[in-house]
Length: 114
Image 1 (tube, rainbow, N blue to C red):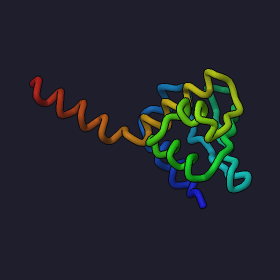
Image 2: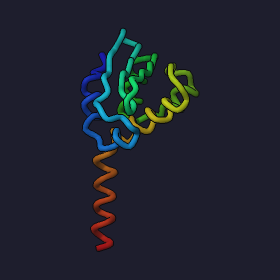
Image 3: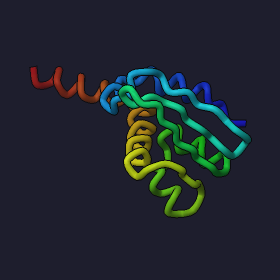
Image 4: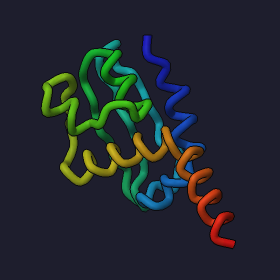
């Protein structure tokens, strides 16, 4: 079974949520084995998105190993929300799963320039 709380905590640790106007940790919930619901606040508004699909593909998406766009195009998952939300969450999943490597690369690059 998909451990959504692990991903919820990983995403909450990343420094990227404020960039997307998400001031509070989002809440991930599995409605059933194949339906992931994310409740979050965008500024002052409550928002929700829903992803449906095989838990394996949902996990790959949450880990940033497969882009949501690719999964949608290949009909491996369904997404319920707006285009803007889809693009936002695709970026959040990728950046949140790679933020340590990204920040390390930026810090190393900046250290070489000093």
